[in-house]
Image 1 (tube, rainbow over the protein chains, first blue to last red):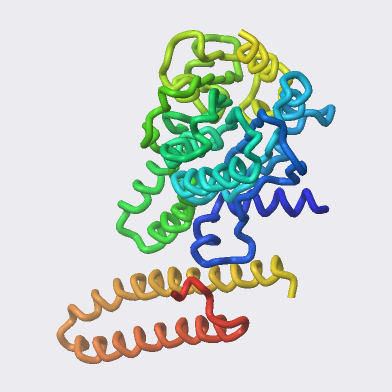
Image 2: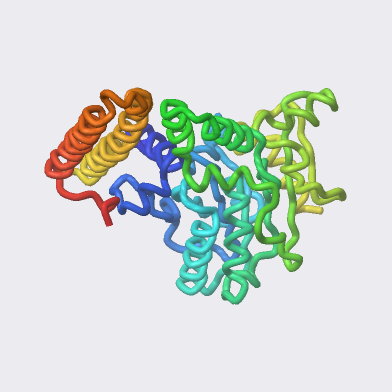
Length: 270
Length: 81
């Protein structure tokens, strides 16, 4: 029951979370690490979920997840973030930066941080790194991993924008009403329509980008990506060894597949 | 009251508030068309203008009353700030 309510709240926050936060509604999710252990090791991994998700989106069928695997094999203490994914990404980034500052000041034994973001979570990580330029925590970050992150936007949201604009242009009050209803999307959702993230990837951190594709066929993979995010967006249009494309996995499954963990593991061991 | 239930009530309150404003706008804009046509006929233009003003005032008062009752149920929303 608790998880079902949490999930419903995550969807609601993703859809209209900026309104909930602005109106100080009791349903607005507060950014927090869920069930953090008493004392982390000197290495921690921060897992940032995507739009309309909770930390349970990381969970594999067998109950494990990327965080637990990283803990078992590399000694990273996992910290699972929960946040209101409907807020502006820059706001979430600022808040995450502040949360990480608190974490490293309360636990000075932390010497290394890995940031792992799924979908929108990757954009929040980018925003946090930008916000934390002068912070104590950013120098501890060696690597950032982005799984299915729309660095260059998501076509679905761009389509939504187009539909809204067309409806708004029709000089009819009923059509305008439909347009205004269609426009009730959170700032977080609307940010996914941006073709460029407002801040660049920091050169001081190693970035590893993972893109999924639904189909093995190169043309279909190029056209549809993982069904939500194109390859070009998930890889930030980059070339080189710091990105991987994995086929046959839909967007929502990228956060919980052992095959993805294998890629992460290989990259960390290289 | 459980904070989540209170939040849900406040959200419903916001929905009624925003919804009533949107529908009020559609109502007024839709009525504008026939009034505009009738106001072009010189013989009845004066009367139609009077009816138009009364109609708009009545519509606005009715929707405002809906919002007033809505706010009075659980207090003003933070959206009013």
